Length: 135
Image (cartoon, rainbow, N blue to C red; front, side, top):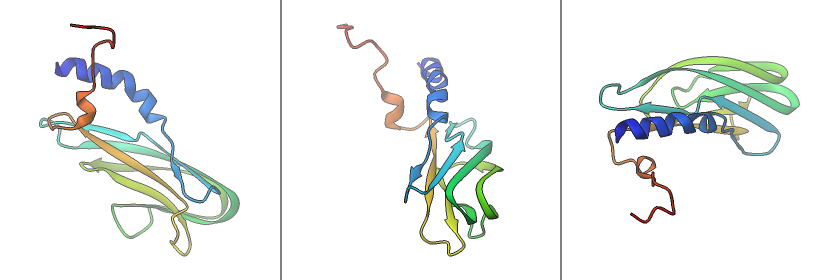
């Protein structure tokens, strides 16, 4: 049963990894890969390297923030695009977001989700048989 669930998740993972952002005001695009961490009792955290890409309609001073701290992960000056890598050990879901020098409002947000294989997470209990199977 667990092996089937893992195979299903592995086949669906490329679709999930390509998920993009929540664009807040339409002028900024933020993409983070991957956006899913799978943990269980044996591995209670994920050591992950996140690739973060952003693109803006306007040149400006922009900073990437995360829920891990007050300080920005990285800032760019007079840029319209940027890219960085961020190494994290993940146990709970968190967000990355872009902001300008005022830090408000958030221009674009991406949530990185954590799937717990040993919990009652509803995402694990999806129907695994074909819809026309009457047994």
